Image 1 (cartoon, rainbow, N blue to C red):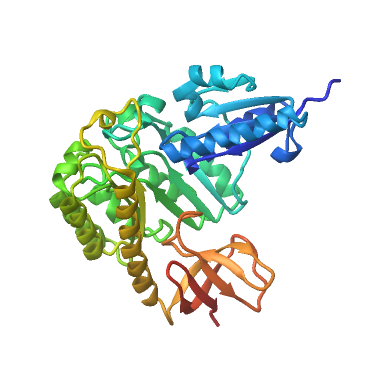
Image 2 (cartoon, rainbow, N blue to C red; image 1 turned 45 degrees about the vertical axis):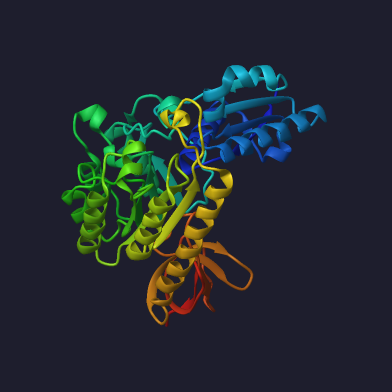
Length: 419
């Protein structure tokens, strides 16, 4: 019998892409292929990202690296999956003839098994694909097409598998999970889904929600009360706000206003004790004035977000904003990016100092030679801060422990196992 070639994958971009990569590998494993590190592979796969210019460059560089391996005889075939292939397939075929196959977006429901690429103690579960917002700067609607939710029964079947494996943390993801179910059931079903997940699980320690659209239509009283009352749902709200100025929000096609945003933040903090709010912002959007930017800076100083990410506006063809007048110079974007990051660094340092001497719950992610790396409920995997833990007791990945904080850094905490 002929041995099937060994396959390796490079998964780029966000956790949603990572889930797609796990699905791709799950199908290949079912068909009997050996899955190996890319350095040992005969067939190399790149699952690409094309959300912004920086991501496109990273994807192209990864493809070129595999082409180099193929030319040296270390790879037999190259397959390019995902957003870049979906968006630029015809152009890529002409410019990169060394690639054997280009495959665009994959179906949300197309596989029943996956091959996990995350550490064994946490996982990502994608419950929906695409977006219903059509923001003027975003290419996602062009790439992913219409918003699609996975059926509740299918989601719960996957959750039962994680429960059997005693998963420490389940991260529920999607471009906008707050819209979950509206396409299938005619109404938003995220609270109902979460209640079912809580009901059928006892061993999953943390349930984290990633990416909620910031409006009261989707972030409902029911959802906030559920997060506040259920101990295993992380007190962590990830709401990408993008801006605070009303004119810019309207140009972005965001369905919210400054007043709505301030009310929502106030409601979240009042409803959920000890909540950590993460947001992301865009600086240098077309025609953004100095005054409008300073309004954003002042907002950050007053809101004091526990976690914050900033993007420089990326002009993407195929989006309405591509043709907007008064595009901002890259130098100005960079200066605005630096100013906000500097402000947030000081805010993060002040917030962390409040934990000095406190005992916090920590999930252990990595075992080092002399210490351990972990996270609090306020920290999503790979994007937020860490807790450096000293312990005389042997710990393993996936352990939940009590840690007394003995020192604080700008974004991270330092502590020792509480006695």
